Length: 209
Image (tube, rainbow, N blue to C red; front, side, top):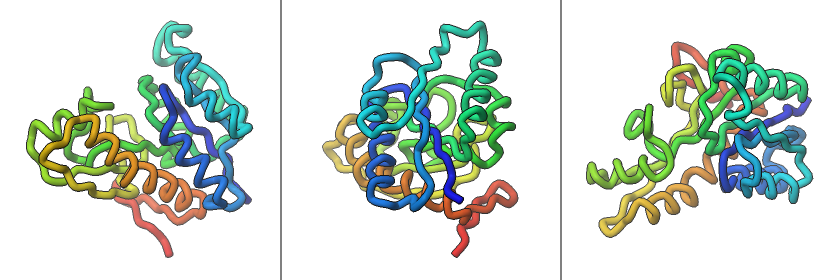
């Protein structure tokens, strides 16, 4: 039985596109992206969903009294669509434990650094790459991990290192990490999940044959 995947987005949706491309190439076999949820209207990720004939919904944080109310609606929407896997692909809205409890070890996130470096509160978007360059690291990369209530602290599924060049700017490093790491390991992690090859024990992910 194939799994139903929801992708949560807040912007352009480049990682969503990487997943759509992987799906079109048959990488997920009979599993498929059946829903895209955006945290604001008008983002380009919604166009990508429309072009790929994937249903979408917009859940704006400001339309809800608090994080709990927002998280409840999000959880209800995922459940109503029989979602098996939730992928956070540049989703910048905070959600609470209602979502995590509804989807234990079934929410994955992509982070543009090698966790535990340059992660946690405040490390998102270009801030991550600014911090890496300020530190003078020689390699950075991307991490796909399961999401837990603690920011960027969930069990690591896959990582890929990317060399830092001496003349890099945050923008050039961001682009290289997306192309060489994020767009490769996010679809791979989704594929492994859909094939039931990921097991979590003691906060570590074990990948089956």
